[in-house]
Image (cartoon, rainbow, N blue to C red; front, side, top):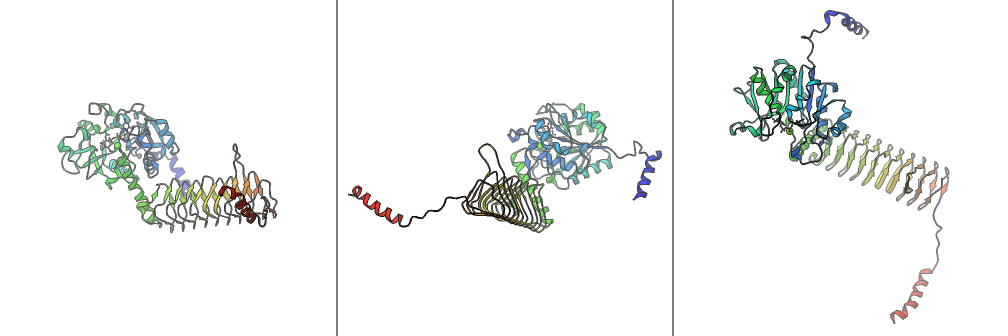
Length: 494
Ligand code: UD1
Ligand code: CA
């Protein structure tokens, strides 16, 4: 190890080993054009923030780009609702370029000229085509680097090419490209071409920016089309080539709600298939909604109609029964979730049992082997190891120790109308059914609370607290009342 370090240090000092401009590896940038409004969606939200697989379109494209180059070499061109878009993906660390007025896909690159000029090769991705895989971007990059054309277009053969730009080859299949024709400007013969432009390209940066000002907005939309670069470069005696995507579906764009739902479905099925290859059983996967970033361990079984969303992580050997919805939560190994539970930003430790119908709200932490049963709601509450709250209970802002039994119908009264207060229940406590614990209040270790108590004062450890009215029994009272009523009712009846 030390030897290697020393050698590499020596190499750095040797001037003959410094890379020359020619031999150095080309600098590659990925530009993601994402400034458009998405008029065809008829939405108040920017197109690239619409979600598929539980994540914004742009988030998927950035994730794929970042598997090929580092964040500092990724440039998202944003414009419509730029602040919202920037905020939504800021945590990725990519660069942003503002296209104030959206005057077309070609214009989106014109405004990116300055930050992109230092690069040798520019790969352009579309912010609304989220199925693109890192492997395909890599394939395009390698094809372009080995053949050195001015432009390489990623294409696909689609059964129904409607709406996409068509690729016009110079001659036979696999020959160089002459032009890309947009659907609106295509002749009936050109519309029959099934090879489409994916909107993903690799460019020689120098040649792109040398010729980009030749784009014109003389077309049906009055926009600067990036697609026109193909014909412009050909006219300038430069080579334009095309490489086919291995899976034609990868290039699908989402201009309409229907296209977006189709992409969402494809993505979720692919996610289920991936989880199954990793050892997860998913019954009727077409009924399950599992977000792209979810992780699930092997031998976990997911029953039909389950939703697992956001950045949820589920351990191994769990069983998640039908109609459960889990969002942004962490579930340990061997957890059993009975039907119809709702979990949001909750943490459930190893071997716990939930449901049916448990509601774990944000900040719920269910300890190892603990039980949370039907119609039990928890919020900002820690339930210690092996503790049980099995029926009809609300536990909010509570710190509950280990081996605690919470009887049916227990309520922590955590809210006084203005502020929230904490209930502390220490290890080994037994809370009798139908108790109300008026916070702030503490029940000490090993104490008992009698059923139906209203606890307003702290309970010392190992003691019994009963906070309810004494029972009064009046023997014969009902019988006497019945007799009395008969008497008093006589006049009415008579
Ligand atoms: C584009 C291509 C079409 C191709 C299709 C593949 C053009 C003219 N057409 O059509 O040949 O088959 O993609 O999906 O390029 N954008 C900007 N700034 C703008 C305009 C658009 O950043 O001024 C962004 C959009 O946000 C979007 C992407 O560019 O992410 C593509 O734009 P869009 O309007 O969806 O192009 P298409 O009509 O799908
Ligand atoms: Ca599109």
